[in-house]
Structures are given as structure tokens and as C-alpha cells.
Amino acid sequence: MEPESKHIELSTDTWVLTLPESWKPEAIEGGVRVDSADEVFSIYVSTYNVDTPISGWAQRDIEIVKNSKHSDPENDFKYMQETVDLDSNIQSFVLDAYDKKNSFRIYTQHFRMGNKLVTFSIHDYWCQSYKKSVNYTKDLLKGFKIKT
Image (cartoon, rainbow, N blue to C red; front, side):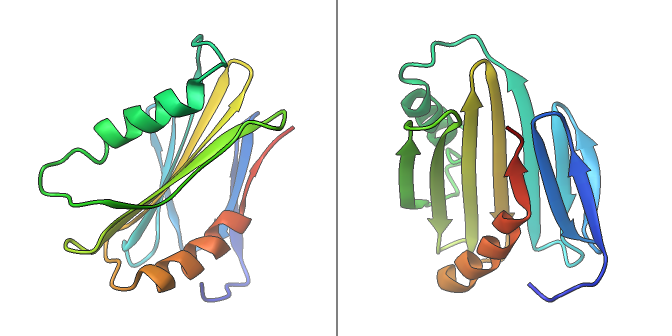
């Protein structure tokens, strides 16, 4: 990510996201979508009130994500990372999906705090190199924090 001196900050009562000023935010149902200036990357952040049991939620959500976002027959996703962290007050999982054939990567992280669920996704619409995309998204992830 190229350094920019000015940043925008988007936040709710559950999360905060800091990005370079060139990124363009747009309200969507339940959250926000923010597009990079070149429109190669999009970030989606949504907050939901959920009443599903805390036990087993991560595995259920991973299956929901795999069966919805990634189910377009044109996509050929390989799951590069699938991790679950249930050992803290903020439970989370990461699902990193890469479609080399279509140069498309979706990095998704869900955070569960009691009955609040925050979903955070980065879409790389022109992922020519998985490694470069991972390095770029690491910088983006530094700007996202769950409020405790």
C-alpha cells in the first residue's frame, strides 16, 4: 500500500476502519463498502445482531460463506487459509479464498462478541499474484480494529 499522508476513519460502536483518503466509502445495508481509488480492491464491513447459539457459530458461518459468496459456478476457489479462534472474548474466524483462474481473491473475517457479529471482507478483483495480494491486505488489516 502506497503511503498517503491523509486518512479517512469510519467507525461504529463495534469497529473502526482507517484507510488512505483516496478510498471511497459507500453505505450499504448493515454497513459500509469502501473501494480503492483504482477499484481493484473493495472492503465490506457489516454489523449484525444475531441470536444463534455461540457454540458452533464459526463452523456454521464458514459453511454459509462458502455456500453463498463463493458459490458462483464461474468461480473456482481454493481455500488458502481457514482458521478459527474461540479462545478470547472476541471469537473470530478467517476464510481466505483464491480463484487463480479468474484472478479473484476474497479474504473474510467474522468477529463474534456475544450477540454482535461483525463481518469484514476484502475483495481483490484483479489478483494476479496471491503473495502480493496477501502483503497488500496485511496493510489494510492493520487499519481495522474491533472495539472492546
